[in-house]
Length: 406
Ligand SMILES: Cc1cc2nc3c(=O)[nH]c(=O)nc-3n(C[C@H](O)[C@H](O)[C@H](O)COP(=O)(O)OP(=O)(O)OC[C@H]3O[C@@H](n4cnc5c(N)ncnc54)[C@H](O)[C@@H]3O)c2cc1C
Image 1 (cartoon, helix red, strand yellow):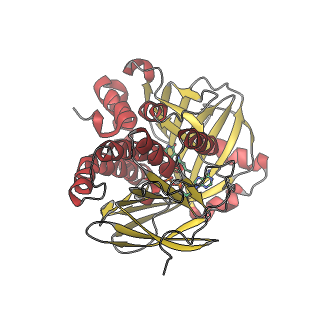
Image 2: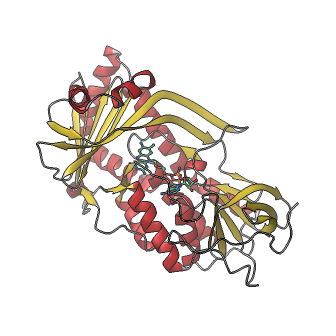
Image 3: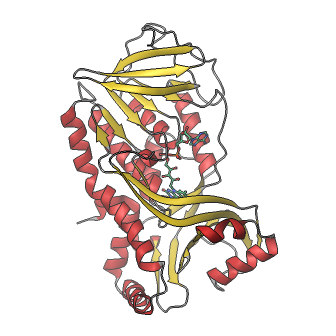
């Protein structure tokens, strides 16, 4: 068992994140333990710090190491507001999405959502995941958020008054009592209470150049094989090209000319692609916990639900969850009290299921070749384009989550 009071030695400070010294120096114990210093974990740590709570982030990565992340995210205007509140909005200013063009291959109908129609400066912004991680790490350093790297949260044992967290690192192991453990370790692992829908699709990720300049338009093109998102990224385009799993690796490995021809054939002629960076692939599976809370525990971000990237919902949803949880915990005498966690889960249920249903519904509706469904989709896109209130609702749903509901 662990050695109370610290057999675990804090690793030396690294440029990536500060180490935890507060508890070692005899300061009051931390109330909340956050597992993993990924985007969701650091965002929660920053939000709680702003609201005056004491928390410790632990991450199994060796000190100072970074995990390369080829993802490029579309963050909504609502996410920008939250990240600015956290002091973690990336600089230089990310490129703005001022309109989104939605269409389907091989069928009529298209819809266009615009920021101007919503009275907003942008519908969203395009941010490289690695830049977002670096910005959050820098904000954590500035805020003095304690991050213990090279340390694994190996086990928890919840009790009535506290939850015992067993931490293991190179220097040994120890058990710390905290009020609440927040899990933000990324992908949901298999287990009881975990629901899985494997789309049998992979995302092929690349940054492409095209003959047309990126003027703030994002393209979402649905094909029976999977959606293609093309996001403006400076002078280039971030591409998420979704394909059936049995084709994705082979398409990703094509030489540039053959890959561009394949992308062009799937996307259509609205952009003429000229070049592409080496491709990365990412498996797409919907995994979610039936409930994102447990005894003195809460799950956030990918650890609570890993969504299909269509519509760019995952991290935007995570930030809304984090803001609500942090505000709820701000003045709570016991951060892990069951009624607090139940209230959080209940308050976030509509938005959570809304985002899961929205992404899953798009894939079910659009990723097939059924002629009747194709006609229905075309009619739906046509109506969306003709009906400003419907367009506005969709845009606001994507920007603000469940707050879009009247
Ligand atoms: C192809 C694709 C496209 C996506 N597009 C969008 C989008 O447009 N908009 C949107 O909102 N969401 C999008 N998502 C979802 C988004 O990536 C996740 O919601 C988000 O990453 C969840 O953050 P997390 O911290 O919960 O988990 P993760 O990102 O999985 O991170 C948690 C784990 O990874 C480690 N980690 C993470 N980052 C780093 C790092 N930089 N260095 C070292 N370790 C790290 C952490 O230590 C931890 O172990 C997309 C996902 C995919 C697969």
